[in-house]
Every structure is written in structure tokens, then in C-alpha cells.
Length: 266
Image 1 (cartoon, one colour):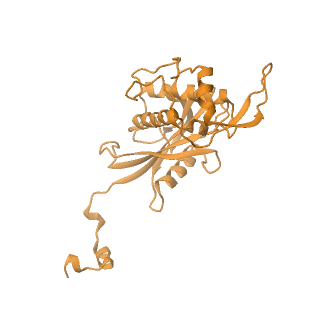
Image 2 (cartoon, helix red, strand yellow):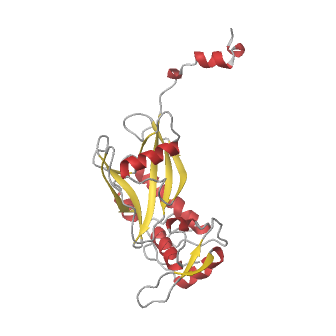
Image 3 (tube, rainbow, N blue to C red):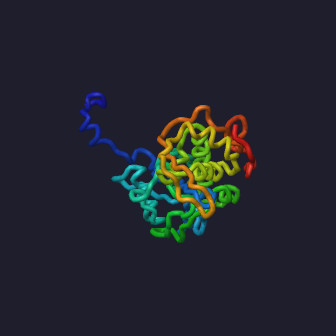
């Protein structure tokens, strides 16, 4: 019987996956949260080889009965105790990394995910090491990116995660995903400052964002001596004209040096 005359069942029965090189699949996560005006990322310290003792993004191998997203959620819970099923989170696939030498053990392809955890800007979700992680903690993103100390190609993945978030914040309301459902304009501006590593003028920011927010008619509890601030919500929508990140060059790339505390909003 020729190849063309075989039935689908006969073809699958005779098919040998071992005729092709083995490639393992992993899932990694870039998990962002904002606290005290700082953008943080959840990192683990590896408990075993390779890169024993180095900082890394949480993640691990995809099981035979899992999707990459399912593995990402499981690995995050196992390594950091962060359960995305019980936290206010926005999760999206970031990119797939396929360089043949990205893992010294074997050929490993990873599907990276971007997770945005909502906080009130003061308290980060508690994390704790588990599984094969020796430690787990939140780390300031901009400091980690300048230190170049992450295992595997996780430095590049983290950089891509920041670039994705920073870029989308120019033309969508995704920044609100890092806040409670109801938030003040000051809280929202703090997220922009933290992600873009800048200091945006309050007046310009308010003028440009107001058309894209919904006023709830409620007020936040005032700080001592201050007036109550209006509370807003943000549906997923596009910002037009887009905001301009003062930390990027005209081509839309991150500046070679962080534009720390640069003022301006086009």
C-alpha cells in the first residue's frame, strides 16, 4: 500500500514521533504589580541547576495534558503561591522564544505570558517560594533590567514584557488593569509614572485621560487634610490621540538610558 492510499488511522498508527528531534515546551511569566510608585516583577531564585542561585521568571515545563496557559498558572502557584484564579489579574500571551541555545539542558521553546496584578498602589500581593524555587520576591523592574542578572534569556523576556506594557499604555487603558476596579486619577497617573519611569504633569494627564474614563460619582476617602478625590472606572478602549511616552525615541523604542523622572506629556 502506498503512502497516498493509507487511511488516516493507518497513517497515525505507523507514524513514529521519534523520527524527529525532541523539543521541550515551557511556560514563563512576567508578573507586574505597582506599589509605592514602583513597578515590580515577581522573581524566583533558582534552587537547582542550571543557573542555581540566579534570579529567574517563574515558570516551568508544560505537562502532556496542559496548555501553555494552564502550565503558566500552575507553575506560578507552585513557585510563588500566587493563584491567578483568586486574584484580580489580566493575563495575555507575550511571545514565544525559540533560540536553540536558550537553555543549556536541551532544545527548549518557551511561551511567555504577561500578567498584570491589580493593587491599590500600596500593598503587593504576598508571595512565597515553593516547588524548586529557593526564594520568591518582588523586585523593582527598572533596577533588575539595569543589573542584567537573570537566568536563561529571562532578561530579554522581561524587557519585552515591559516594552509591551509601556507601548499599550500609550493607546489603550490597560494601565487600569494594575489598579482596583475603581481608582483615582492620581492612582492612574502613578501607574504611568511607575511603568514609564517618569513624572507626568498632572494637568496634562488629567485632560488627556478624562475622555476615556467613566466617573462613578463616588469619592475616595480623603487623606488627612485633603479633599475627597473622584473615583473612575475604565473599560477596555483605545486612547486617541495616543499619549506619548517621554522615555521612548521617535521610532517607538525605549531610550538607551531610562528617562528617569522626565517631565512631559504630548
